[in-house]
Length: 230
Ligand SMILES: Nc1nc2c(ncn2[C@@H]2O[C@H](COP(=O)(O)OP(=O)(O)OP(=O)(O)O)[C@@H](O)[C@H]2O)c(=O)[nH]1
Ligand SMILES: Nc1ncnc2c1ncn2[C@@H]1O[C@H](COP(=O)(O)OP(=O)(O)O)[C@@H](O)[C@H]1O
Image 1 (spheres, rainbow, N blue to C red):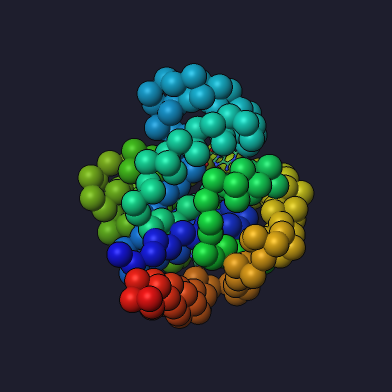
Image 2 (image 1 turned 90 degrees about the vertical axis):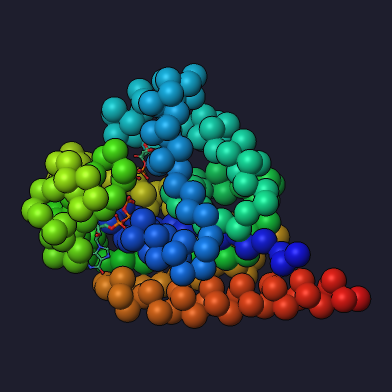
């Protein structure tokens, strides 16, 4: 039984977490878990956590750590038989500590993308809310402008993708992300799993991430084979 592989992907709004997560899920067969999707599911289901989360999201705020952790950790417990990639969690130190207590991570991917690139990307981002599919008029445009490729339903631009909203989002991101990055650099159990990728193009970052994951996953599987033969 090959050992399972667990990773998280972090980065500022517009850094390409969703784009790269889809490529990782497709290339390596990992389950792509998105904290944003879990939040939206809870909001749609009107769960206690969902109702509470909605009040924060409407104000453009992060959901409080205790609500987010209570919402997310039980979902991870359902995934004990799968290798997964977690996108959008942890975003704070408290979340990183809670995740670290709940499971062992093999890799933490950190996307370091320049502000101007983020602004440019988000100005051209269009999404299909029901599916979460993401488009970009410069990078991956829909076949028909303004329409989702699969359903033909209308695409929208998110309010907080506007340049003036982005500056505040990025300042807040920097404040909460640094302790998380330091956590993965310094904490004994988590040390050595952080890999940071800096570039302006996903297509240049992707081969490096793909090589890293290929190496990490094959190492884990060969270790598991050795362990099972001893
Ligand atoms: N021009 C360009 N756009 C890109 C590139 N990579 C991703 N994008 C687009 O940039 C936007 C942001 O990418 P996402 O994958 O949504 O980024 P994210 O980190 O998930 O963003 P949040 O969900 O806001 O945190 C999307 O419209 C992507 O299609 C790239 O290399 N070049
Ligand atoms: N790990 C998290 N901690 C706190 N809030 C979160 C977390 N993940 C998602 N959320 C909330 O859910 C919303 C939607 O998340 P997501 O789809 O990742 O979009 P974005 O991060 O681009 O706003 C976020 O704006 C935030 O309010």
